[in-house]
Length: 316
Image 1 (cartoon, helix red, strand yellow):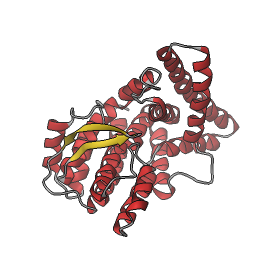
Image 2 (image 1 turned 120 degrees about the vertical axis):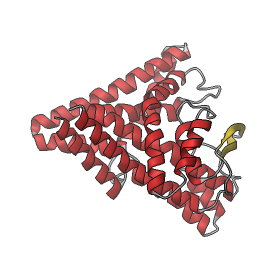
Image 3 (image 1 turned 180 degrees about the vertical axis):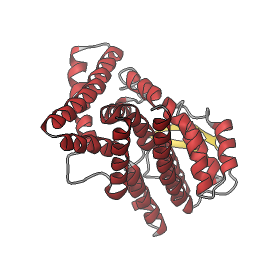
């Protein structure tokens, strides 16, 4: 059974590398997002306590996602074993974001390389939550490196971690947690209480995967011929400087590997947010840092597969 699941995960990973998110099919993450929107409106009308309402939303979405995928795979298996395997591989496949992260970040790189700053800002706005309309080239590069670093955990290591533990249902349950956090896990007036449960659960879900990245990102940096010692040193020094208990780890690892400093001033919906600086400015941020961060991300994704397979064999 362990071997069976491992093969499914490898197939799903290869599919993601080859085709990324299938644009011709309804994406389950988009469906989860719509369900969250509908439930948020319904629950907040019935329950006035925002923290309780937010907790109920988390329970319904995460547990509902898990059992929906579990039952769908079970139904497919009853019809035919091969169909069940295909459905399982599909859900693991759509939980990964390796190729799409590279595609979206490369769009930013290409725009900057063509000196089209306005298009680079638009392309960046597709993958970050901060305001992008007034960013200069160096700020765009910094934001690109930061989002590749953070999503190396959120979009790759974490879904693979949960897939190896509990297959497609658990991997999709994690994506439901991640989607909840991205939609309601904000510290603004609207979501500071309602999104509390979503944000905390996302922190818990990413806790172990983020710490696995302490091992994987420096190794990936070594393979990519980047600053592996600096990556380790900056992780140890700066990992706690981020407001998130998890995001600081991959950001510090990437900053050290590239020899750059990230963090600093950001605007979210017009509101100034000062973030602690991470890394040493051994060199100024430059366009090729985007390409190098994508390379590290790709290698880290392959290492995540190898790491998961090795652990599965050891505990078999």
